[in-house]
Image 1 (tube, helix red, strand yellow):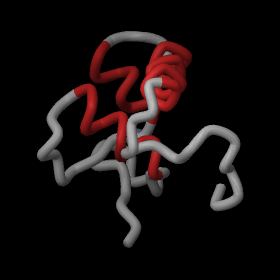
Image 2 (cartoon, protein in one colour; image 1 turned 120 degrees about the vertical axis):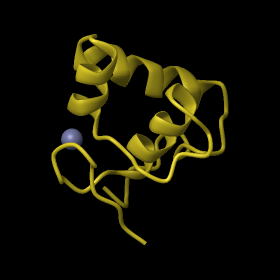
Image 3 (cartoon, protein in one colour; image 1 turned 120 degrees about the horizontal axis):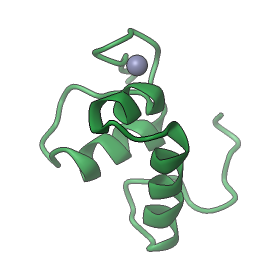
Image 4 (cartoon, rainbow, N blue to C red; image 1 turned 45 degrees about the horizontal axis):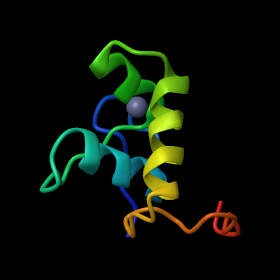
Length: 72
Ligand SMILES: [Zn+2]
């Protein structure tokens, strides 16, 4: 199942879906890509990517495992 960013329409990755849930609301059914999430929170896209890395390191199962980038 694929989703598009509700703000810009770009297809979102599994990580972007996961970080939307973590940062906004776990029950979210609308998702944002990294640049639009950054705009939403008024931060830099790098800050969102840093959060993704952080949650992945914490072992959050919403995110792809470390090193598994084959689907990208
Ligand atoms: Zn977007």
